[in-house]
Length: 285
Image (tube, rainbow, N blue to C red; front, side, top):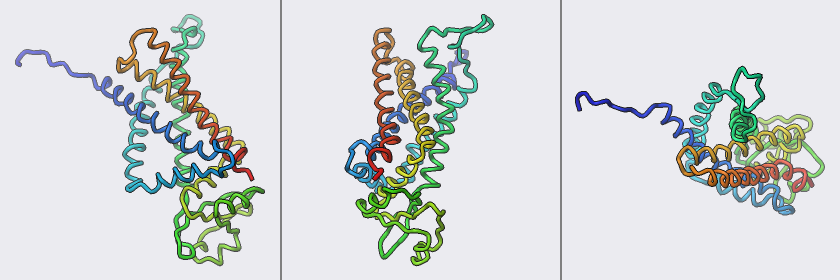
Protein backbone atom coordinates (compact mmCIF):
# COMPACT_ATOMS: atom_id res chain seq x y z
CA UNK A 1 0.00 0.00 0.00
CA UNK A 2 1.35 3.46 -0.99
CA UNK A 3 2.54 5.57 1.90
CA UNK A 4 2.46 2.69 4.35
CA UNK A 5 5.40 1.99 6.59
CA UNK A 6 6.93 -1.33 5.77
CA UNK A 7 8.36 -3.04 8.78
CA UNK A 8 11.13 -5.54 8.37
CA UNK A 9 12.37 -8.07 10.87
CA UNK A 10 15.95 -7.08 11.81
CA UNK A 11 18.61 -9.38 10.37
CA UNK A 12 20.26 -9.69 13.78
CA UNK A 13 16.95 -10.96 15.23
CA UNK A 14 16.72 -13.66 12.56
CA UNK A 15 20.31 -14.79 13.02
CA UNK A 16 19.94 -14.95 16.78
CA UNK A 17 16.98 -17.31 16.30
CA UNK A 18 18.88 -19.42 13.78
CA UNK A 19 21.86 -19.51 16.15
CA UNK A 20 19.57 -20.61 18.97
CA UNK A 21 17.87 -23.37 16.96
CA UNK A 22 21.16 -24.75 15.69
CA UNK A 23 22.44 -24.71 19.26
CA UNK A 24 19.55 -26.91 20.36
CA UNK A 25 20.30 -29.36 17.55
CA UNK A 26 23.97 -29.46 18.58
CA UNK A 27 23.00 -30.18 22.19
CA UNK A 28 21.18 -33.29 20.96
CA UNK A 29 24.18 -34.31 18.86
CA UNK A 30 26.56 -33.77 21.79
CA UNK A 31 24.43 -36.01 24.02
CA UNK A 32 24.47 -38.76 21.36
CA UNK A 33 28.21 -38.38 20.78
CA UNK A 34 29.13 -38.59 24.47
CA UNK A 35 26.73 -41.49 25.02
CA UNK A 36 28.46 -43.48 22.26
CA UNK A 37 31.93 -42.63 23.58
CA UNK A 38 31.01 -43.56 27.13
CA UNK A 39 30.32 -47.13 25.99
CA UNK A 40 34.08 -47.63 25.87
CA UNK A 41 34.16 -47.35 29.66
CA UNK A 42 30.80 -47.67 31.38
CA UNK A 43 30.37 -51.45 31.08
CA UNK A 44 33.51 -52.57 32.84
CA UNK A 45 34.74 -55.94 31.60
CA UNK A 46 33.04 -55.97 28.19
CA UNK A 47 36.12 -54.65 26.33
CA UNK A 48 34.17 -51.77 24.82
CA UNK A 49 31.85 -53.94 22.74
CA UNK A 50 29.02 -51.43 23.18
CA UNK A 51 31.22 -48.71 21.67
CA UNK A 52 32.26 -50.99 18.81
CA UNK A 53 28.66 -51.95 18.02
CA UNK A 54 27.39 -48.35 18.02
CA UNK A 55 30.29 -47.03 15.94
CA UNK A 56 29.89 -49.82 13.39
CA UNK A 57 26.18 -48.99 13.10
CA UNK A 58 26.96 -45.31 12.50
CA UNK A 59 29.76 -46.04 10.04
CA UNK A 60 27.45 -48.33 8.03
CA UNK A 61 24.98 -45.52 7.31
CA UNK A 62 24.68 -44.72 3.59
CA UNK A 63 26.04 -41.31 2.51
CA UNK A 64 27.65 -40.88 5.93
CA UNK A 65 29.98 -38.07 4.81
CA UNK A 66 27.03 -36.13 3.39
CA UNK A 67 25.06 -36.66 6.61
CA UNK A 68 28.00 -35.51 8.75
CA UNK A 69 28.58 -32.45 6.58
CA UNK A 70 24.94 -31.33 6.35
CA UNK A 71 23.70 -32.21 9.82
CA UNK A 72 26.85 -31.67 11.89
CA UNK A 73 29.43 -29.65 9.95
CA UNK A 74 27.15 -26.92 8.61
CA UNK A 75 25.26 -26.35 11.89
CA UNK A 76 28.58 -26.20 13.77
CA UNK A 77 30.00 -23.72 11.26
CA UNK A 78 26.98 -21.40 11.27
CA UNK A 79 26.53 -21.58 15.04
CA UNK A 80 30.26 -21.03 15.53
CA UNK A 81 30.55 -18.02 13.22
CA UNK A 82 27.62 -16.22 14.85
CA UNK A 83 28.88 -17.27 18.28
CA UNK A 84 32.33 -15.80 17.57
CA UNK A 85 30.71 -12.54 16.50
CA UNK A 86 28.76 -12.40 19.76
CA UNK A 87 31.83 -13.31 21.80
CA UNK A 88 33.85 -10.52 20.18
CA UNK A 89 31.18 -7.87 20.80
CA UNK A 90 29.93 -8.96 24.22
CA UNK A 91 31.13 -7.41 27.46
CA UNK A 92 31.13 -9.37 30.69
CA UNK A 93 29.72 -7.53 33.70
CA UNK A 94 30.00 -10.22 36.36
CA UNK A 95 33.29 -9.02 37.83
CA UNK A 96 33.86 -6.40 40.49
CA UNK A 97 34.12 -2.81 39.29
CA UNK A 98 35.56 0.44 40.56
CA UNK A 99 32.45 2.22 39.37
CA UNK A 100 33.72 3.09 35.90
CA UNK A 101 31.65 0.31 34.28
CA UNK A 102 28.54 -1.69 35.17
CA UNK A 103 29.02 -4.69 37.43
CA UNK A 104 26.42 -7.23 38.60
CA UNK A 105 28.67 -9.87 40.12
CA UNK A 106 26.08 -10.96 42.67
CA UNK A 107 23.72 -12.38 40.03
CA UNK A 108 24.15 -15.99 38.88
CA UNK A 109 22.87 -15.34 35.37
CA UNK A 110 25.56 -12.71 34.81
CA UNK A 111 28.21 -15.24 35.76
CA UNK A 112 26.55 -17.78 33.45
CA UNK A 113 26.66 -15.22 30.60
CA UNK A 114 30.38 -14.66 31.20
CA UNK A 115 31.14 -18.39 31.29
CA UNK A 116 29.10 -18.92 28.11
CA UNK A 117 31.47 -16.53 26.34
CA UNK A 118 34.58 -18.14 27.90
CA UNK A 119 33.50 -21.67 26.99
CA UNK A 120 32.73 -20.56 23.44
CA UNK A 121 36.45 -19.83 22.92
CA UNK A 122 37.46 -23.12 24.54
CA UNK A 123 35.07 -24.96 22.22
CA UNK A 124 36.25 -23.09 19.12
CA UNK A 125 39.81 -24.34 19.49
CA UNK A 126 38.82 -27.64 21.10
CA UNK A 127 36.48 -28.66 18.27
CA UNK A 128 39.04 -27.77 15.59
CA UNK A 129 41.76 -29.82 17.30
CA UNK A 130 39.36 -32.68 18.04
CA UNK A 131 38.21 -32.93 14.42
CA UNK A 132 41.77 -32.74 13.09
CA UNK A 133 42.92 -35.46 15.49
CA UNK A 134 40.03 -37.92 15.31
CA UNK A 135 38.79 -37.43 11.74
CA UNK A 136 42.11 -36.92 9.97
CA UNK A 137 45.29 -37.75 11.93
CA UNK A 138 43.96 -40.79 13.82
CA UNK A 139 41.09 -41.85 11.56
CA UNK A 140 41.38 -45.53 10.51
CA UNK A 141 42.78 -46.21 7.07
CA UNK A 142 40.83 -48.82 5.13
CA UNK A 143 42.89 -51.40 3.20
CA UNK A 144 42.50 -54.92 1.85
CA UNK A 145 44.63 -57.29 3.88
CA UNK A 146 44.75 -61.05 3.32
CA UNK A 147 41.68 -60.88 1.11
CA UNK A 148 39.53 -58.95 3.62
CA UNK A 149 38.88 -55.31 4.42
CA UNK A 150 40.75 -54.08 7.48
CA UNK A 151 40.91 -50.77 9.32
CA UNK A 152 44.34 -49.57 10.39
CA UNK A 153 45.39 -47.28 13.23
CA UNK A 154 48.79 -46.59 14.74
CA UNK A 155 48.93 -46.99 18.53
CA UNK A 156 51.71 -46.83 21.09
CA UNK A 157 52.87 -50.00 22.83
CA UNK A 158 51.83 -50.80 26.38
CA UNK A 159 51.62 -53.88 28.55
CA UNK A 160 47.90 -54.51 28.15
CA UNK A 161 47.58 -53.73 24.43
CA UNK A 162 48.43 -57.23 23.21
CA UNK A 163 46.01 -59.06 25.51
CA UNK A 164 43.21 -56.62 24.64
CA UNK A 165 43.91 -56.89 20.91
CA UNK A 166 43.77 -60.69 21.19
CA UNK A 167 40.36 -60.54 22.89
CA UNK A 168 39.07 -58.13 20.24
CA UNK A 169 40.50 -60.19 17.38
CA UNK A 170 42.76 -57.34 16.23
CA UNK A 171 46.16 -58.07 14.65
CA UNK A 172 49.20 -56.01 15.69
CA UNK A 173 52.14 -55.39 13.34
CA UNK A 174 55.55 -54.05 14.30
CA UNK A 175 57.83 -52.14 11.93
CA UNK A 176 59.66 -55.10 10.32
CA UNK A 177 56.39 -57.00 9.80
CA UNK A 178 54.99 -54.20 7.63
CA UNK A 179 57.46 -54.96 4.86
CA UNK A 180 56.14 -58.51 4.61
CA UNK A 181 52.64 -57.31 3.67
CA UNK A 182 52.38 -55.50 0.34
CA UNK A 183 49.32 -53.50 1.43
CA UNK A 184 51.17 -52.26 4.53
CA UNK A 185 54.61 -51.58 3.07
CA UNK A 186 53.84 -47.89 2.48
CA UNK A 187 53.38 -47.30 6.21
CA UNK A 188 56.04 -46.36 8.73
CA UNK A 189 56.03 -46.57 12.50
CA UNK A 190 57.87 -44.87 15.31
CA UNK A 191 59.95 -47.05 17.62
CA UNK A 192 57.22 -47.12 20.29
CA UNK A 193 54.34 -47.78 17.88
CA UNK A 194 52.57 -50.79 16.41
CA UNK A 195 49.97 -50.97 13.69
CA UNK A 196 46.56 -52.32 14.69
CA UNK A 197 44.60 -54.01 11.88
CA UNK A 198 40.95 -54.42 12.88
CA UNK A 199 38.12 -56.11 11.00
CA UNK A 200 35.68 -53.27 11.79
CA UNK A 201 35.95 -49.47 12.12
CA UNK A 202 34.53 -49.66 15.63
CA UNK A 203 37.41 -51.81 16.86
CA UNK A 204 39.99 -49.53 15.26
CA UNK A 205 38.40 -46.41 16.73
CA UNK A 206 38.18 -48.03 20.15
CA UNK A 207 41.94 -48.62 20.13
CA UNK A 208 42.50 -45.06 18.88
CA UNK A 209 40.38 -43.64 21.71
CA UNK A 210 42.18 -45.84 24.22
CA UNK A 211 45.54 -44.70 22.87
CA UNK A 212 44.58 -41.02 23.14
CA UNK A 213 43.52 -41.28 26.75
CA UNK A 214 46.65 -43.16 27.81
CA UNK A 215 48.22 -39.71 27.91
CA UNK A 216 47.44 -37.81 31.14
CA UNK A 217 48.00 -34.52 29.29
CA UNK A 218 45.43 -35.41 26.62
CA UNK A 219 43.04 -36.60 29.32
CA UNK A 220 43.29 -33.28 31.16
CA UNK A 221 42.82 -31.26 27.95
CA UNK A 222 39.80 -33.34 26.96
CA UNK A 223 38.40 -32.97 30.49
CA UNK A 224 38.46 -29.18 30.10
CA UNK A 225 36.93 -29.57 26.63
CA UNK A 226 34.09 -31.81 27.84
CA UNK A 227 33.25 -29.66 30.88
CA UNK A 228 33.17 -26.56 28.68
CA UNK A 229 30.92 -28.33 26.16
CA UNK A 230 28.53 -29.60 28.84
CA UNK A 231 28.14 -26.17 30.41
CA UNK A 232 27.84 -24.37 27.07
CA UNK A 233 25.24 -26.84 25.84
CA UNK A 234 22.80 -26.72 28.74
CA UNK A 235 23.30 -23.07 29.63
CA UNK A 236 22.54 -22.44 25.97
CA UNK A 237 19.49 -24.70 26.28
CA UNK A 238 18.22 -22.54 29.16
CA UNK A 239 18.78 -19.43 27.03
CA UNK A 240 16.96 -21.09 24.12
CA UNK A 241 13.87 -21.56 26.28
CA UNK A 242 13.94 -17.88 27.25
CA UNK A 243 14.63 -16.71 23.69
CA UNK A 244 11.66 -18.61 22.29
CA UNK A 245 9.31 -17.69 25.15
CA UNK A 246 8.93 -21.24 26.45
CA UNK A 247 9.61 -20.20 30.04
CA UNK A 248 8.80 -16.63 31.05
CA UNK A 249 7.64 -16.87 34.66
CA UNK A 250 10.39 -16.66 37.26
CA UNK A 251 9.43 -19.96 39.02
CA UNK A 252 9.61 -21.79 35.68
CA UNK A 253 13.01 -20.26 35.01
CA UNK A 254 14.29 -21.42 38.41
CA UNK A 255 12.99 -24.93 37.74
CA UNK A 256 14.67 -25.07 34.33
CA UNK A 257 17.91 -23.85 35.91
CA UNK A 258 17.88 -27.02 38.01
CA UNK A 259 17.04 -29.14 34.95
CA UNK A 260 19.89 -27.54 33.01
CA UNK A 261 22.29 -28.14 35.89
CA UNK A 262 21.26 -31.82 35.89
CA UNK A 263 21.91 -31.93 32.14
CA UNK A 264 25.39 -30.48 32.68
CA UNK A 265 26.13 -33.18 35.25
CA UNK A 266 24.88 -36.00 33.00
CA UNK A 267 26.88 -34.85 29.96
CA UNK A 268 29.95 -34.30 32.13
CA UNK A 269 29.64 -37.79 33.58
CA UNK A 270 29.36 -39.41 30.14
CA UNK A 271 32.32 -37.45 28.79
CA UNK A 272 34.55 -37.97 31.81
CA UNK A 273 33.68 -41.68 31.86
CA UNK A 274 35.01 -42.00 28.31
CA UNK A 275 38.14 -39.98 29.09
CA UNK A 276 39.19 -41.51 32.39
CA UNK A 277 37.50 -44.90 32.14
CA UNK A 278 38.42 -46.12 28.65
CA UNK A 279 42.09 -46.84 29.35
CA UNK A 280 42.58 -46.34 33.07
CA UNK A 281 39.64 -48.53 34.20
CA UNK A 282 38.12 -50.69 31.47
CA UNK A 283 40.73 -51.29 28.75
CA UNK A 284 44.10 -51.12 30.46
CA UNK A 285 44.83 -54.85 30.43
